[in-house]
Length: 364
Image (cartoon, rainbow, N blue to C red; front, side, top):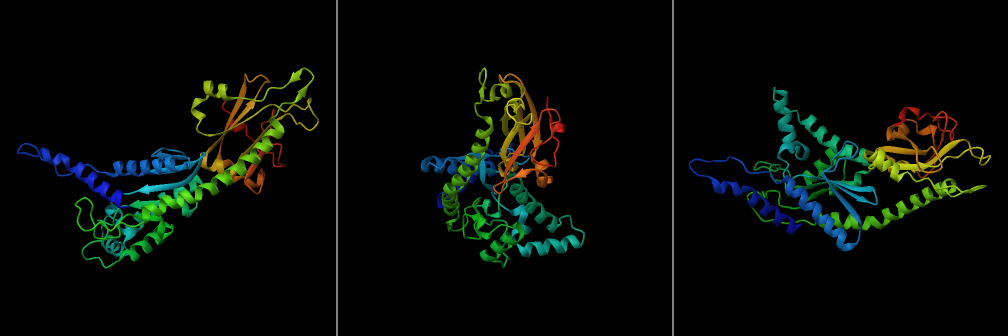
């Protein structure tokens, strides 16, 4: 935390460099914001920590998924394990942290002022909730990083650090410790380096907490993937045929040529299960996938082999919301593993008696 605070001071100094160009013919009344540089700094620290310690984190900076672009998102083997909202300062959302400021703005709004503090608080809360919903996270997995309480704590403020943390917890729906405050000096303004830095252990706690959870997350992923593989291998392996052995369905080249824009989504491929091969086959395609993983990716791409030579495939693009709204109409295991038998002729699921249709999701 101390090193990050000192680096932020340097960032502010660099941002003010344009003031050196001031003369009788040139003046500037502001300096460039440092939020982007701070986000990059934090993201690179996370990246190097993971690299040095072999954690395998993928750090995504402002990358949009599911119409959501968190400041920093951390993945392990395709699963999002944390989102970090980064704020250089919190002056524009003071009511979110300060009950005193909320009350003052509420009184002004009642008298005809423009700022409704309740809408502001709800807007910030909605954004944090959106991260949880978009990536299937719990309240323990979403963080807000704030260097100091500059512009939140004012000269006449009576709230102490504990009060600000309590207000954050109440308004955000997150644990108080998920506010990663880098300095315990509530009067500190890093843009002017006024006061002692008084670094907290907030950033260290964030790193060590993510580090400690990673092995557990990897174990969970391995268990789900093993279950998926078992189901897939059961139906998508080589089968003895009179004229040889059937090729395993491989749609990679077909998708690369015809649907490259779909590569970011959860994709499952199935060969044909023709009834003339075996009595247990029902002229359908078989798929298994993890519902939590789909929630994170947003869209499920079902690639259905139309022949035995990996030349032609039917492609379906199914949104997570379809399964969420009809979860009782699909075969879903206790671990969230979904199994589908999509019929050749009707494109309906034959695994569950509800026979949910998929024809509306066909892309070709």
